[in-house]
Length: 433
Image (cartoon, rainbow, N blue to C red; front, side, top):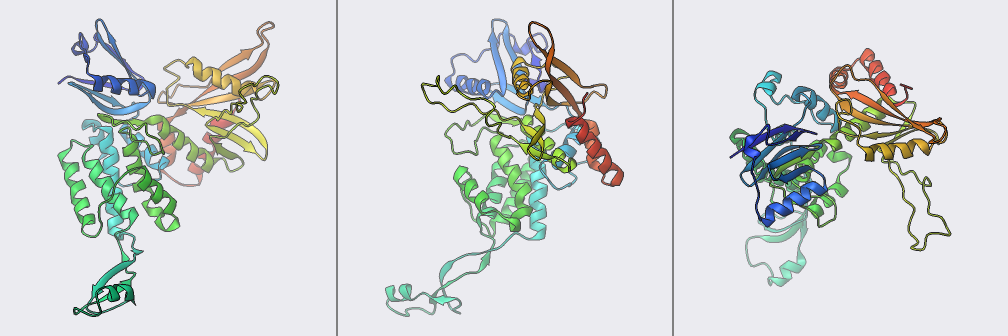
């Protein structure tokens, strides 16, 4: 079985991997539908050429099984750095999964890293004690407690046994949040090939199943759970978030739609992670500003009142971040998980950023934040000029986010480090260069 290893935003051809030469999926309709869905997201581009397969990855990492072909897409960020940033972004407990040196010598499938974190989170919840909730229970008891169930007593024709029918409300662990926790563990066992991880998952599931019943793990269940979560269940948030990430990464949507795709593998969108990482970092380290996620720029575009025969609503752009003071917009930012120091800026990204910059009037600007590992990387500026006079009208700034440096800032916490964090956040958002 050929195995292809690549990183995000990478391309492999039959030149590097001879096993891709003359490789074809034939007329298999199941493979065709999977390939079409992968291209539409887009998660992975698979080109079938006369000379063989060409694979192009995007921001998704993980692994995929397409017939006899196994594709492994690994993140470029070192795993110890990635774990630090990942735990910070999703507010996970800082529990040591394995020695840092082993992370480099024993590379794991990306889902195994998430599953190990889930095991650590669930183990911590079990050590603390699972949350109990009052449940309505109707049963017959030899020693009555609660309220006598008169209707049931009448239906059975009075007292016919040495137990009385009662309704009481004991505090039980068999609640929806613990049921989702149990189903998440069983779901994770299907995603890993590591025998040790699978054994630990089943052991934890067995402990939960002593007092918790099974349920379905779908959109409706998770929606009911999210609606019922509050400050009393905040310690469950990391584990539930991990379960949702595992579901999304096999193509199961968590929205009320019917376009879920059961992927033959596991693909995690690093773009989601990068946006969440920056959102928390900027909000915590720009106290003098307001950071708004996915802010709708209402009124920026509008159909002409005289020329809108279909009565359509005006397009409303939503940049990833808008930085404001009061009602004043100070910066418009997009975040893309693509190393623009090594890779060129795609034109569709540039056009979007140019519109944001021009919307702010003369000398307006917008920025795109991107992850980078090269310490030599520095901001790049694209001037938007008036076509005839070549006068600068606005500019687009490409700002690198050094992921190694950011992880170092997050590993410690003291007054000096906090000052450095705030300086770095202002540099990403407000600096002219």
